[in-house]
Image 1: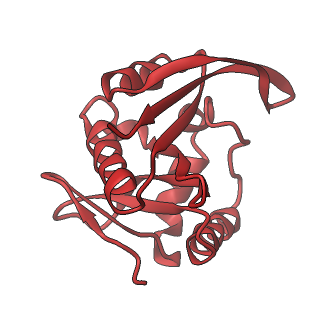
Image 2: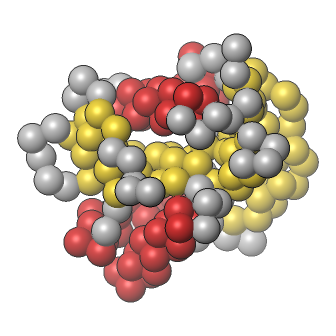
Length: 176
């Protein structure tokens, strides 16, 4: 199956390739992006190439999708959105996303997540889409609620980043 390309009013969600490494490195090496991401920021562009390969492997092994977010008429990626921890048997996955700070507050995250959710429920036949978010990430917590996710609870000491343990909110959106 070819990697699905999705389109919104302003965005194209497309397959990520090695030519996108520099764009993704700008995200994954930025302290503001990585502050609530759950992993350490990247320091070498080669790490981004490895991440791109892991996205491709997850797709080929039916473990997930990760789209690059591209503004129509531009060539660079401003972020990514997609699914991981995909269980086709149990018809569930978790959504993840990030957008470069230059594009925060413009509705791009909401637009791309909405399109990914539509694809997940319709084309992947998911019944449940989950999300894990740092308590401190107020914008992401608010965005998920706006998109119809329900908070299910708090996972204590769930993510360790920079040697510190963090609690996270767990959300879900189920197919209607």
